[in-house]
Image 1: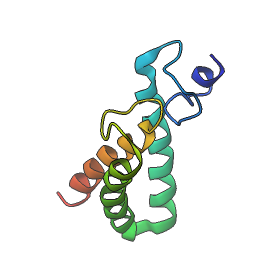
Image 2: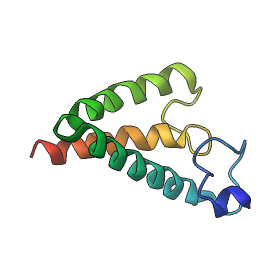
Image 3: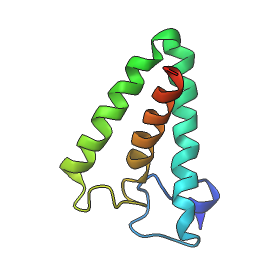
Image 4: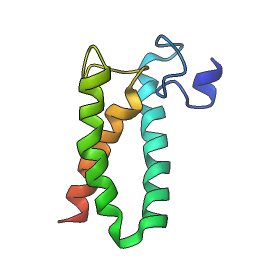
Length: 95
């Protein structure tokens, strides 16, 4: 319940889906938004380089360390979200 209260259920702090199972995605997206804001604030016009790095390394990380690859939630949910979020941000960046 504490992990749900602080939106940590998608960050790998629990070893199972807790109280509200689908909320892991909200947790992962929340931290992806925070990371995106930090990257854009610090890197500015070169943020796209970091987005490409995230889009390339996140799926490789999942392939290397997750036994279920993209079928992750509480354990590697943030990495899965980072992959999709960075691809979406890149599409918006280069439209």
